[in-house]
Length: 162
Length: 129
Image 1 (tube, chains in turn green, purple):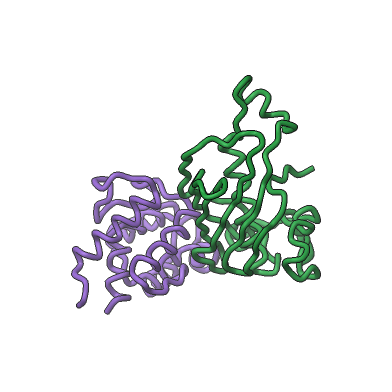
Image 2 (cartoon, rainbow over the protein chains, first blue to last red):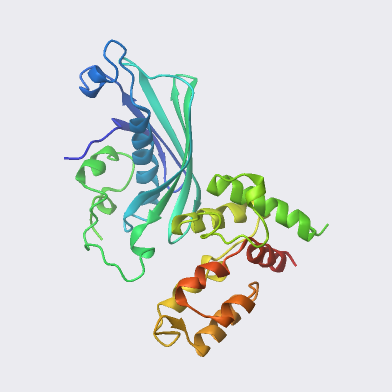
């Protein structure tokens, strides 16, 4: 099972930018403990949601041929809490992309309110581990991610095929 | 107007402070990226991207940090030491780097010490000419 922290894409401009949406609900059990009586979405999960938004953007830019791994959180600043009932949008942009890696910038918003700013580095992992080998199959981009992009990109390119 | 070496150093320092979470004072010409400033491999790519943006130039990673290719070639490394041939190769690929200390004991584990702040400044200076 993969924990997917985005519900759908709203916009997807190949190789450039993407906007994803997440609805936050009290049905997410971890919110009962984080914190009792004061449920807020953990910041680490907002980082993961951004990593999924930006990671799919980076993966699609190379037709999902690379295994795209979050390598570094360059910067993450949070301005507001996110609570059950909130809809957040995750706005990711590719800043630089090279054969070995990519860097992205991003914002999380609730309506027009800025919730967080998060910049990341992704490694194209096969190109960065001299001599080490990973499985042929693309374990990063599974069918679950594939379905998120339906309607935005050519399906034959997506989803775990090298 | 061409940038002076001081201007380049100041901008390189800003890049490194942002990329590695340092204080201005940590970044000196002699500081080694990995040993003194705590850079890891992914940071090298981050630094390359930031340098490209800061100076509006293209920086092929293997040009600025070519040691990986040399280290993986058995002709260039033998018994944990860089061979004479390997040293010649490194020198030709890294003209922006000072080899005087490394040459005394070309231990392969010391290759990381070649990547200094000064070497980056030299590299950028060469690129901007």
